Length: 327
Image (tube, rainbow, N blue to C red; front, top):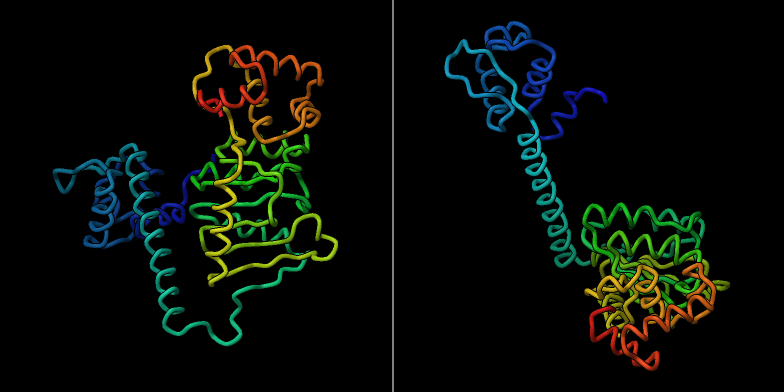
């Protein structure tokens, strides 16, 4: 691995001189402040300030005499503290900038010609989708349905965002869940990474809401031959309406995520996935394709679940699964 650079050290918030001193100390045996000053050509007060900054973050051992050698400490705790403080400063700066812009909009309204809704052409749509998603800070909410224009089925941006703490709630059209390849390569990996997923027979549009700041809306498959682009909605009266539409649809949709609750060792992974698919209203044929099993094997799995639940019908199985927290 490459050694740390002065530029990387200053990105933590260290002064240029402190980063230079620390980088020099990594390359030499322990030096006294006087020797360091001679090595770097730095005067006493400036050098002392750099050493004090390094010591304040537990990067250097405390010195008791002026001629004591400067000793490096394990930087793990100190650098993590610097990183967290820098992140806090950046977050505060972002919050202040957004608040200032909101105040500007309330005071001066929108400048003539400033768009509240932009038309995104098909040629640039996937680039805009990726940029919006990468820019998410807190949450992404989506209606997911065909048509799909991404070059690959998987969704690495979402998986990365989930790993850094961005929450996702995605409402899938049933046709998307019934697509075996998309279910296995896109939906399941995203759920496993932490996505909250639900399903409905259909969704009103393809839509992605990012942090209550922006919404990207395009029409569903039935209208794709007429409308090839999408609408990018900025902060305006339409944005909260789209947010309310999502929340209403979300409340009335069926959970699609992993089965929760303790069903005991008797519930196998295939049982859990099957319950989620059945709850989403997926047909037996589509469920069998998604699970990569035959319809006969699926029928036996359903019978086994009914036996575990003491149910004589699929309806009773569904009631039992929900009551026991399996869904």
